[in-house]
Every structure is written in C-alpha cells, then in structure tokens.
Amino acid sequence: MSVASFLASDHPTAFSFEVLPPVRGKSIEQVFKTIDKLMPFDPAYINITTHRTEIIYREVSEGVFQRTSERTRPGTVAIAAALRGRYGIPTVPHVICSGFTRSELENEFIDLSYLGITDLLVLRGDRAKGENRFVAMPDGHEHAADLCRQVVEFNDGAMIDGSRHEPLAEKFSFGVAGYPEKHDEAMNPEIDIEHLKTKIEAGAEYVVTQMFFDNRRFFDFVDRCRAAGIGVPIIPGLKPLTALSQQTLLPKTFHIDLPEELAGEFRRCRTNDDAKALGVEWGIAQARELKAAGVPSIHFYSMNAAASVEAIAKAVY
Image (cartoon, rainbow, N blue to C red; front, side, top):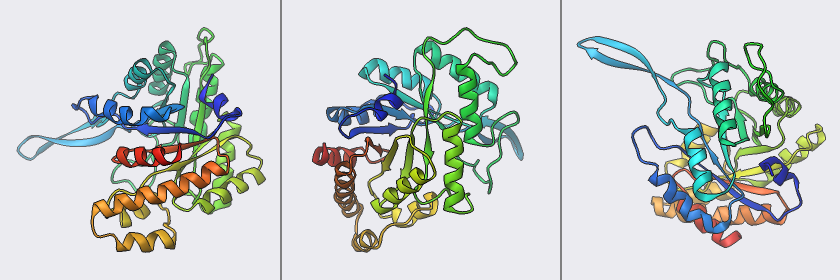
C-alpha cells in the first residue's frame, strides 16, 4: 500500500518523521541512532530530505578560485533504500526542482523504480545560497507543479527525450508541501491555496504542511483548502523548539509566527534546556489536540530534535 493510500484509509492518527542525509563524509550511523529512538512508536513511514547542489568557489592557487558544484548532503536514494531494508517500513525520499535538471530527476526516478521505492514527496526546494529569488537549473523546473507533471508523465511511460519506457511494476505516488501561514513568495494566502490546488491537479495525492506552532492556523488552512476544492489528506508537520536561538531563527527562516502564549513562555527561557522542555510541553499539547481532531498522521521534523520528538511521542502515542 502506498503512503498516499494509507493516509486516505480509515486508521488512528499515525506517526511519521523525517531525517536528513549525513553531511558528505560523515557516517550513516547517526541517522540509524535517530531512527532507533523513534521506532518504538511504529512510524508509518520515514521521509528523507534532499539538498540542492550548491556552487562553491575553492582557492586552487594564490588568488585563483575555481568554481565547482557540490551537494553537501548526498545519498538520499541510497539512504531511502538502506532504511527500508533495515527497518522494513516505507521510505519517502524528497525530490526537488532546486539544483536539478529534468534529466537528473528522470535518472533518479529510474534508480528509485529499480529499488522498488515509489513513494515521493515532491518539492520545489530552496533558493540557492546568496540568491534572493528562486532560479531553476537550465532545463530544470521552475515550480513544484511542473515536477509533479514529470512524475505523472514518467508513470505513463514518457521519457523527456520523447522515447517510451516499459510499464512500471508500481507507479510513483507522491505528496506535496502546504503552508498554513503562506509560502513566503506567495502574494497572499488565497494565491498560495491556488498554487497548492495546481499541484493537486497535477497529480499530488496528499499534503504535508510546513511546521506551525498555532493549531488554529492549521485548522483554518484545512478549512480554506476544503473550500477551494482540495480534498486530499492534509498532514500537519510539527517541530519542537530546542534552542533559544529559535526565537528569531524560526520566524526569519520559515516565515512563521509563534502564538503569544508560546512566545511569552519562550522569552522567559534562560537556557537551551529550558527551551527544550518548553518545546516538548508545547509539542505534546499540539499533538494531542491534532490527534483528537482525527488528523490522518502527524509528521515530525526531527532535525536536532530526536530526543524531543521521542518525549512527545511517548506522551501522545
């Protein structure tokens, strides 16, 4: 059963989370340690993030720099296969427009299909470092909806060079991202919902939201999606607070608000341990309310927060 089919079925609120590939040159063991902490809560699936290729200038001689491209966290496809083999549960690699050409994406689809990994999360991805707007790769995709269409066309047997491939034993199934507080590049929330609907019409079967700290924002987002005719499952994404620096880092990076009750408590924290304790307390309250509302699953962003996610899951699941 695909992740999308599972999310659309009748079941208690599931638990899922995502992990980052290790930095180039680092061992996968830390990824295993994170997952081992969270396996007792019976995750329905595990997401693996993908990071774009960045342009780096390396000094090759005095005053001379060479322009090179480097992916600092490679290995998404291999890690998806390794985790599925080790833990025996579905893995959902992220596929992104950012830093990839259509040909590179097609090659990734081929690799994944050979491995029998057919659940995807389709994203546009971040802007390149130092850029103030998103710029697609030459022969790449400008929008996530375009990548959704490429996945569907590949499912139907179409290659980007006009040739055909043999029918897939199992077609790709995929979700996309949604933004309860609006994508930072959308002109307004209504246009943001229109963009999301375009991705659903292009073949996406469920939505995973960006993190939020006010459940009212999520419930309002779901209502607006339903009013716009978006009927697919919508999965809330949660990330526990873990550090004092997030008082400014999270709003700046993700363009989200912290509700005043949480912000007031956060301002009273004096150490990172205080922030972690608050993050667990707030995360438990959020997750319990979402679970009581019958959401299909709660998706946790576990980067630098595995212990906090574990504590929340113990209290909620």
